[in-house]
Image (cartoon, rainbow, N blue to C red; front, top):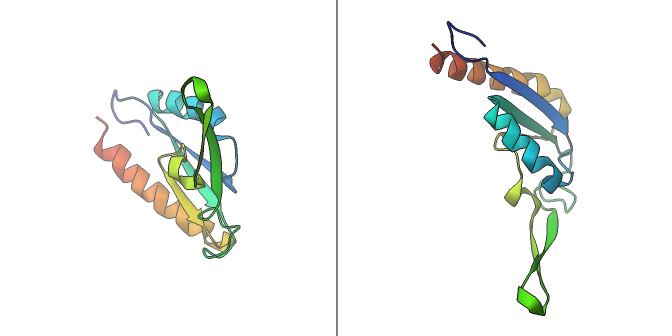
Length: 116
C-alpha cells in the first residue's frame, strides 16, 4: 500500500500446520519487521482442540544450560513462544477465503490510517 511519499507496507500470508523449528525462523521474522513486512500465519489445525494432536496441545522441549553442573529441561506449550505475532488457527479449510478477506480488510484499514 502506498499513499503519498510513505513507505511501502507489505503483507505475506503463510499457510502451514505451524510445526517447524522456531529458532531458525525467529531471525527472519525480526528482519521482516524491520523491513515493514507483516507476516500473517494461518495455522491449519484440523484436529479438534481437545485432541492431543492439536497445535494447541502440543508441547515443545528446550534445554538450557544451568551453570556448570548441567542443563535444565523445560517443557512448555508449543504456541507459547510462536515467533509470529499475527496468526490465526484455521480448523476448517473452507473458511480460509473468509478469514483472508477479513485480515486483508483490517490490514488495508490499518495501512491507510498509518500512511501519508
